[in-house]
Amino acid sequence: MSAIIEIKNVSKEFKVLNRHEGLKGSLKDLFSRDYKTVRAVDNISMTIEQGEIVGYLGPNGAGKSTTIKMMTGVLEPTSGEILVGGNVPYNNRSKNAQEIGVVFGQRSQLWWALPLVESFKLLKDIYRISDEKYDSILELYRSLVDIEPLLHKPVRQMSLGQRTLSDILAAFLHDPKIVFLDEPTIGLDVSMKAKIRTLIHALNKEKNTTVILTTHDMGDVDALCKRIVIIDKGKMLYDNDIEHLKGFFGSYRTLKLRIDGDLKKQADQIQKELPEFSVSADDEWISVLIDEEKAKVIDVLGKLQHSYNIRDMQLEEISTEEVIKKIYEEGVK
Amino acid sequence: MKLKKYLALTRAGIIETLQFRLSFVVMVIGNLLYLIVVYFLWDAIYESAGTDVVNGMTFSDTLIYLVLATALFNFMEMYAVWEIGRSIQSGKIVLDLLKPMEYRKYLFWSFSGSFIAKFLLTFLPTFIAVAIVTNGAIPFGINLLYFVLSVVMAVSINYSIDFIVGTICLYTESIWGINIMKQVIVLLLSGATIPLAFFPDNLRTVVNYLPFQSIYNAPLTLLLDGAPTAETVLTTLGTQLIWCIIMMIISKLFWKVSLRQITVNGG
Image (cartoon, rainbow over the protein chains, first blue to last red):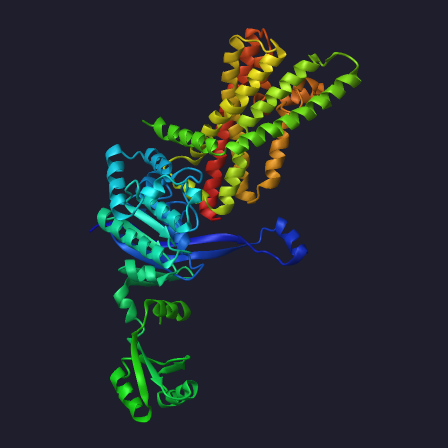
């Protein structure tokens, strides 16, 4: 395994004009030199190996896109060093472009008015893909998804799902070493999401392409990523395997109980009995979030069984989504 | 083959342009309306002048010139400013920058297809129609070759100007006003709306030192002048070539500097 992306102590600062309020303020802004510096990315380091799928997560405005733009060479870091495939991306944008593919969920790189196959042919010439390689990758695409009906459809007539699928295929067309996928499943229905996840997984396996995936959909993360990196306010919060993440805040499990009577009242009472855990109730279940380092689930259940008539129970592992939500909200302690 | 990737863009441009059949019809109708207005306007001007020849041009000279200028405008105007501005605003420009090709070239070759399609579908028919209707007012000879050369350079100069104005959008983040201003300046000072012969002497001297007249005035003068002297041909084409190179360098450098600004400061 060799490192394909190396990021060392990278920071990125933007200068932003200090805007004033109101009409008078707006007029003042026309001549204002009053800039403030915003640190969008603050001292980030990571190494990504060839063939990894890395989930790059963070709340909105955390600095994800900025990092990606630096890796693609569109932005230059204020300080620090980035190497992508051995090149400095912003000094060598065209060369770097040959090695990477990008999909930005909300925008398309395809030619709007043309059938998909024409876009593919164009990309073939722009990236100078040889005939054999082009044929073999189309063959691979055919084996993975049903592209025949898409090929002759103008992109503007496609549904969002079809278009995203096409965009992903287009990004992999020139067999890049790295593909950046920025929210590829945004706005898609469940079955299309599943299709796209399968496709990304298959392409990564087949071509050993490194995939950097930003998303807000934890389903994507669970389905695709072994490793995740979380940033917030420009700072790196977490960089490790997804398995480690679950033990990150201690080992939490949720015990769900169905008890006769008024759930709200019962929940309050249970909370009094178990002050160290948080207890909540919805229409059907009472949930007890148990930290297994403090007590075993079975003991809690045994204790409760004495005083309540438990009709049904469920045990839930904490989901990636909840852990990440906790990280976003509380940060790392 | 290096050229292949550019020609691929040309090809796609032609196909793309041909997808929108209806827009041609609308364009032709719009032009007809414009030309009718032009006809009556200049008819009135010549009427009130009281003579057949104004500033060395007869009514039909002026009309032929303006009809062909409009036809030229239709295929040369590429709305590159719009395209650049919109890409910047929508952020699509990131995708274009990530093509393994210089943005300036990428955009030019993307437009080249529509040039060819529009040249064949709008300019050529207009040209032939004018030639038939006026029956010999357009000389056919070596001047056609000069004209073609001149138009190629005009396209390049026009593109460079558009690209420079488009680059300004990187700073202003708005397009509309800038684009309108550019269009008015170019159309007026290039002689596309009023033949340069009608300009006051002082203004004409100034205009001759500007790049704009190389876009419309130069090719049309070469086309319509029945027997241009070798000197006229050489100075006209020479001036165009010089502007061609200067504007290309300026637009290239300006873009490079601006892009650096953006990548350093963000946007």
